[in-house]
Amino acid sequence: MIDAHGYRANVGIVLTNKERKVFWGKRAGMEAWQFPQGGIRPNEPMESAMYRELQEETGLRPEHVEIIASTTGWLHYRIPKRYIRHRSTPVCIGQKQRWFLLMLLTDESKVKLDLCKNPEFDLWRWIDFWKPVHEVVEFKRNVYRKALDQFEPILFPEH
Image 1 (cartoon, rainbow, N blue to C red):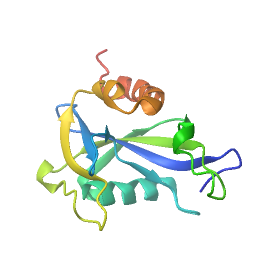
Image 2 (image 1 turned 60 degrees about the horizontal axis):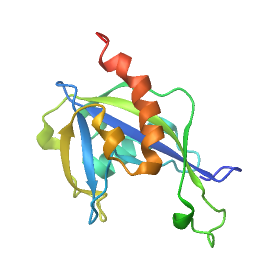
Image 3 (image 1 turned 180 degrees about the vertical axis):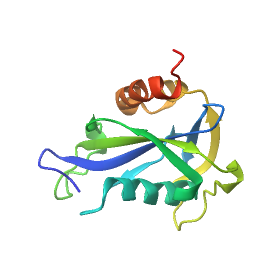
C-alpha cells in the first residue's frame, strides 16, 4: 500500500529477550543488518501484518512473543534516489512505519530463518539496544533512533 505521498505502509519489529538485547538479522546474501520489517497489505490490520512478517522472517508465532508497545504515529524514511523504481506505479519514495516492541517468551531455538521460500535473513544475533542505530544502513538510522527513543523508557524504566 503506497499512500498519496509515495510512502509504502510498513511494520517494523524490535524483538527483545529477557536480557533486553535485541534481535538483529543479516539480510540474505548481503552484508546489511536490520530489524524485521515488511509491508502492510491492503485492508490488513497492522497487528496482523506484524505477526505475519514476524513469522515469515523469524519463524516465530504470536504465542512465542508478547507485544510490549508500539510507536505512536507513523515514522517515515525516504529511499535514496538511486533505489527508487521510477517505472513502478505508483512510485514509492520511502516507507512509513509503525514499530512494535516484542518480548520473546519462548526459547530462542524457535527462531527459524528458512521457513519461507525467499528468506529475508540468513544470520541473526542478539545485540545491545542502541547498536542498530549505528549499524543499519544510513537512510534508516533516523527512523531507528525515533522508534528506540519511544521504546527505551518502556524497556529500561530505570533510566
